[in-house]
Image (cartoon, rainbow over all chains, first blue to last red; front, side, top):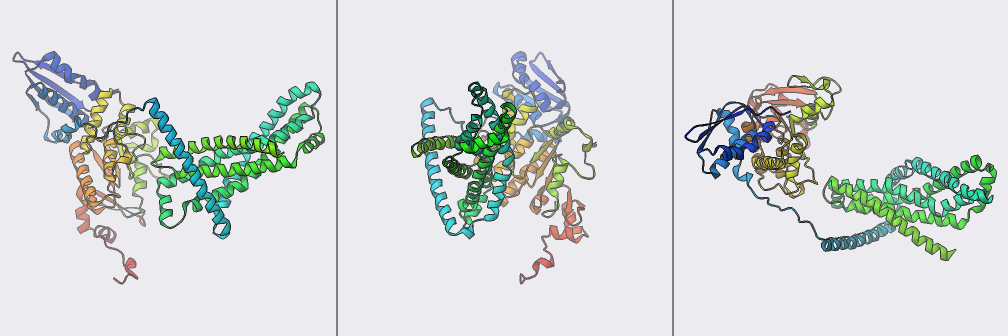
Length: 376
Length: 222
């Protein structure tokens, strides 16, 4: 609660007005005092204004600003102005106020809002640039991957193992839990329909085929994009902000080889394994529904599951997960390298890495669906 | 003041309440900060201004918005009043007209000035500055020293400056406290000019006279 404003205004017949201020003249009082600047002149119409500050025991720069603004207003209205009773030490703060700065125009004007056409144009240019950046980054990445394959010893295997732990081992609990619940839900929902036709046993086939062909690779990829793709973007983005990436370049390292290749290799090795785990956990979820809700035996359920699994589906699922792994790690790193500025840019890169990865996962999955349809 | 790694910045972070001491107590204006709850600590922080080594301006906000932020959050001032105060603060640190610039558009010295303006937005009774002249050229650094001295004299704000820049120490310090890594504490206290000439402690005179130890000369041929 700000202190009450202690001021008193007296006027003489001559038109001389005295403003007596007392107590603290500080930031807490500025808000209450600032309307006085105009109202004092409008209400009292002084021919001369004297400010008595004898009772002031503390003044800060906001208090000084009030006095300066009062004086400026008096000058603008050609009213003689004087201050009394402020000690020499306290007067020093008035000298700190740069009067010209109070009316100084901004040296940079705020950007005007763009109209719809300009916004569409900007978005198109930025989308085109984005596609160009991704394609050129992928080109560099493939070049570096080929180089790494030819000079296998130069790959930073210590980093690869560390990222394998982060992407794979640390990601396994959440991938396992979500897949288990997904299998449970799928089996439960499908059982409600299949029960009516006495086709309970096909719940096992449905869960296995859906997980192996589509949901296993896609769910794993989405979880990895959210966990690890974002982490790659944030890590490289922060390194960009701290000029660590520039340091690598000046030391003669290729930032892509140094930072991206270990992440890509780790993802390529772990995402297919995570996908297999995801399928196993989902089948376990379905198994629980089958045994508890549909009176199937464990043996029957597993036998039906094995019957439903085709080697072609398993291989295509693994290939899909390899492509997803490559996409997630490449997009995560590319978004990190694009960071310019500070903390906000790192946040944007992280969000963009996840959104772009998920979008591309869906697009690639659609392409796979069409291609596999004709191959099968 | 003190050499690199002696704990100057760590001590400062403890004083302003960002870090909590494992042992010992911190008293500010007669108040033991370890006994304060979160609300009381927040009130204490509002009476303290801090300039960080990197200036720590929010990159997504303009300089004007950076300075206005504590005023909009912790006071009931109107928009025009906040704008007047922001312009006044920018004038005080000689950055008039830079209210719509973003931190990334300013030089290192300007960022420090803007950081000081933000730290002083709520008119704190105490201002802490962590290595204000770090990373600045000698002229900019001397200009910043002058500005700090002028603000100290004009506002009467108590200023605690962490630095190892001898020039800054002699330009603005009324009293110095010297920390030492090996002693793990204070080894000297007083007027920097007197300490430079009169101190009996070799570590203190070595620091003030930029003397390196004999071990450092080894192998240099000097």
